[in-house]
Amino acid sequence: MSLNAALESFYVSNKFNSTGKLSVALVCTRHAKALGLPLDSNKLISDGGGQVQGLGGAAVKSILADHGITKILSSEGGRTSRGSIGNMQSYVDFLNQQQAGGQVDLEVVEKFWIAKVHVFFAGKPFKVSSDISSGVTSTFQDLLLQAEKRRRAAEGTQVVGALMQHLVGAKLDCAIGQGNLKHNSYSTSDSQTGRKGDFEIGELAIHVTTTPSRNVLTRCADNLNSNNRPILITLSDQVQRARVYAEELGISNRVEVFEVEQFLALNTYEIGLRNGGGQLVGLQKIVQRYNEIVDQFETDPSLRIELI
Image: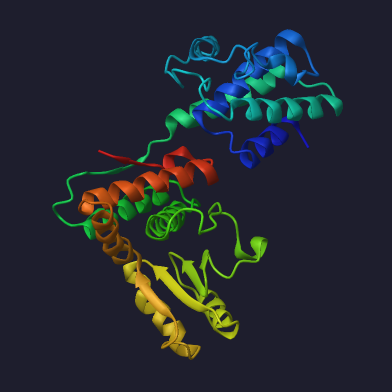
């Protein structure tokens, strides 16, 4: 595996796309350039024992400036992150493993992380207006329209499906409480995890899809054969397609099919009322949880939602 391929694999598997983790990678790469490899991670911990040596906003700013970047990645440079030491240790282990397999070109490594910083800055989040006088359903319809426009501009991306999956996951977390639901990246297939749907809650197997194919409905039939209750959530203009396949498979009266926009909107009101507010409070809760899920399970920061 080439050095760049190894770096990409580390970046994806360790979710090194946040400001804090990118800062750790940049600063630790500079430590490696100054001290050589292999690095001793114990020597990169400050005297107080609670921070990574040299990690801070000023240090990161200086590294970025060397590459002509004037934007601020993080004012703290990841210094205040409780996980920064663990992130540093993981990255140092990776560098040392690469060094054990052959000489590591640290200039290539630094350029890799600078490229990821450019990706981070280029990622523009979806926008949601806090003025929801036109209705919550319209708000979610607008989000999906933004995602569809982005998909058309970058053919091959699955941004609509990712948006839908994580919005539904965020809604469910807000409704039943965090910790009761397992989340995955959008690219994780059911076969990889052995799960019965995108989400499992008790006997429920929840499938979220932009295009309900016959294969998806066959999986719903499999759920029923395993004494699970399937729920299918899709785009409003795909509901009839799903029902046709369900009819062909003889499960039309046993699988629930919901429009994603209304599924999300109805629960937005309920979550808002439960938290002592209206639909805006519900929307804020869902967006906040959605962004947390994206930060944890995806590497594309442009999937985030900004409430304006």
